[in-house]
Amino acid sequence: MPMRYSHIVHLFLWPATLLLAFGGFAQGPLSPPIPWHMPTNRAGDVNRLLIDIDMDVDNTTLTGYPDSSVGDRSATEERLEKSEYVRTFTNVMDVDNDGVPGYADGIDKFGNGQADSCCKFEPMVVDIPTLAQYPNAEVEFSYLASDPDALTINSDGHYVAAPGVLRVWKKDGDQVRNPHSVETNGDFVRPGEVYSCTQLGLGIQNTTTILYVEAIDWYGFEKFSPITAKFYPFGHSNGSFASSQTIKVRPYYMSSENPSATNAGPTNTGDGVGYGLG
Image (tube, rainbow, N blue to C red; front, side):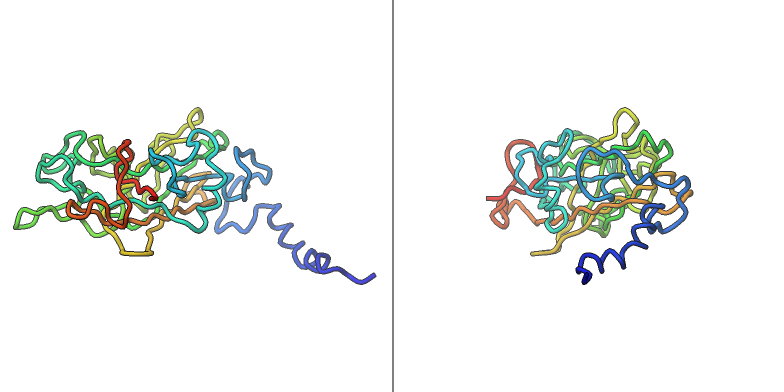
């Protein structure tokens, strides 16, 4: 009987199947091995069994939160994460008219640590459903950050943000934020630093937390800046990351002279810099 195409494919793929069953193509030692049949709260690829980050990729909610932010996010947003991006405005406006632009306001630096001083940010839900199995797990984020603690004032008295595009915070924009890293008890999630799940507000009884994304700079049309979360189930020092996920953010520029830039203004329902399709 002639072999079907599917038979030929299986003939070549069975060695890879065996490798995956015994731990996959890990980039480094993972001991003990990650169980193949791992419980999860959503259907999807094995990458999402360990960590999932979600934002309002389809840009449909008035709050800026992903659809159905408690529990499973919408299937539509899960699919869109692979190709689409979250639209958000740069935090440059002086919403409380105190002479301080948004990217320098509400930060406990230069005496600007007052609440309700700038727009609210884009929520980013971080979900690690199997955290109970990995008490020593750690998480690392990577993105083009503008370090808030490197904010300066030039000789003309203007606030100058550090180079970068985004900031990820543990607190929302209407709260006073410590510009130091989470590693030193601040609120800024600095890229390249490895955090315990406890530092990010996660725990065995609380496997989901919310971080907040602030846009500082913009690229112009049709460009985005990615945020990647890496999950180390046994800690950073005990092996390479076993799972990662990326969300793409596209900042838009908005100023007092052009508050409805690109025909997309912030809503009046509290999502602040969230972009609304219109």
